[in-house]
Image 1 (cartoon, rainbow, N blue to C red):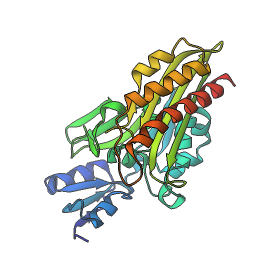
Image 2 (tube, rainbow, N blue to C red; image 1 turned 90 degrees about the horizontal axis):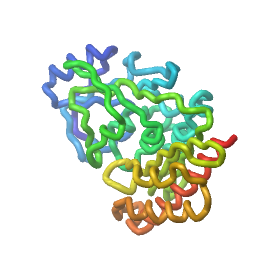
Image 3 (cartoon, helix red, strand yellow; image 1 turned 135 degrees about the horizontal axis):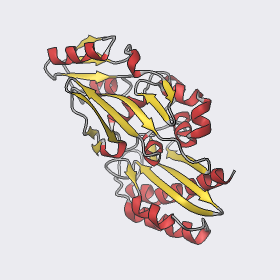
Image 4 (spheres, one colour; image 1 turned 120 degrees about the vertical axis):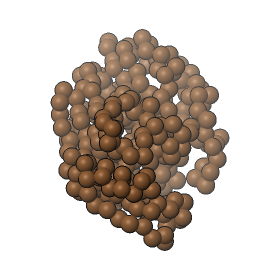
Length: 285
């Protein structure tokens, strides 16, 4: 494996100083579950890694009308959070099926998002919740919509010297349900396709709909035109069949070692249909 320097700052300020010292030849790492594999495969060869694991500013889950999740929060923490399970079920469900318990004990939500894999399990739930992320660097702090973070497979709008510090989620109306579903080759595998739905229901009619899919486009994808189709409608089988067809036309999957493009296209529509049913049912409870 390629040799590299390894730094363990204890604050954001210290991390920025180290990045300035190495002049952009370093990478920030959180859990490191993906970066280390890619280095071993020689897919990347950084001169230095700057670990964010010891920075307390990036940890913690705080309620503030909605929810603020530190980028260094582990998926195991999300999985064990009763608050997230109650209020943001789709995010909780995605954490439960991400990889395996060993990975969930070290992988962070910020790392999963910044890795920008089209199949990232945390992305669709956070997209339907219209999450925003804070990016901070030596030049200051900015907050952007999560959907504006992803620019391509493995690519983001985050500058190299910036660190994602927090994820912000707004509180949802009480008559809102969310759901997340995924298909992998085996349980807890990288997703062949995944999907999330948010439904706000009133008297059997959808007042607000948010849909997102992953692993079927260059980036995790909001399905905004399909959301508009569902809003102000009753969730009946004819509508769901039409939605399924619309999803298969909206996605642009690829064939790789995990699946064919044809299968991904077909299953994405099925997953969205099931997620809508599940989210609508939760909203009515």
